[in-house]
Every structure is written in structure tokens, then in C-alpha cells.
Length: 161
Ligand SMILES: [Zn+2]
Image (cartoon, rainbow, N blue to C red; front, side, top):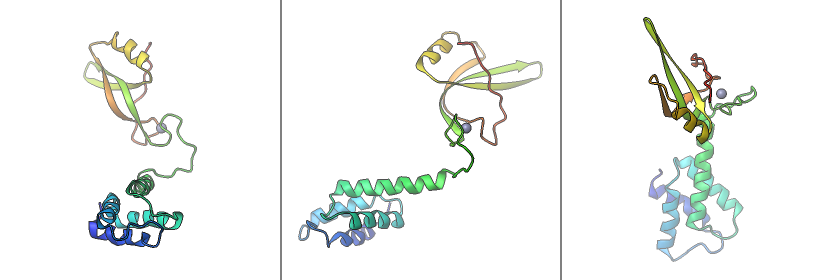
């Protein structure tokens, strides 16, 4: 979030556009309020750049929110998605994690145990696995390291469905 004062300052950059709500302080405040949703001052300033250069008429608060959200998302993507030059992993699309439902099986052996997990890709598969769940198995929802993750050393196990 950015401060209301900073948002107000940025919104004033739209004052040259047609239909800017001059003389309607409440409407200008609405626009500034929409701008406070930006995650940083830089994001808001870039979102307002887009609007100031791309619009003839003054945008509505909903347009400001949309522009801010697009810029928030863009910056977040840059931060968290490591651009990879190698072809994207077909399992996780390069995210290194898979989100979904997993069958987790604990294998006990004399003096140690290990766990394997398998992604369940459809409701039908989840249902079939659930109806045949062994005492050492459970179905968990969440995220799991993909096979392409450097920390992944658990082998995938196929189960009959
Ligand atoms: Zn992957």
C-alpha cells in the first residue's frame, strides 16, 4: 500500500485529461483511494503513467484499480518467477512446485521409513484412490516440490488406479 497523500499527488497527474472530476473533491479522493492499492510508490507511478499516456478521458476508480493490479502482478511475477532459459518443465510450467492433491504413502521398513507422494490429477482419480486407501496412506491437499526442483529427492511412485 502507498500513502493516500502520495496517491493523491499521482492522481493529480491525470488532471489534464478530459472529464477529470475537477471541483468534485470526493470523486478525486475516490481515485486516490483506488491508487493506494499499489504495493509501492513505483508501481503506482507506473500505473498512472499508463493511464496518463493511454487515456483521453480521465479514468474511473475501477480503471485505476485495474491498472494498479496489473502493475502489482507484473512486478510480483518478475520477483518470484525466475526466468529460465531452459525449456519449461511440463509438470509445473517452471514454477518448481505443483499444487493439488497428493497421495502420500509412508513405507516402513525395519528401522527406517520413507514417504512417496503422487499427484492425483482428477476428481475421479482422487475418488478411486480414496476408496482404496491403505492404513499407511493419506490424501493431502497442498503443494509439493516438482521433480525438477533441485531439492527434490523423493522418488515418484505409481499406484494402480
Ligand atoms: Zn517441474
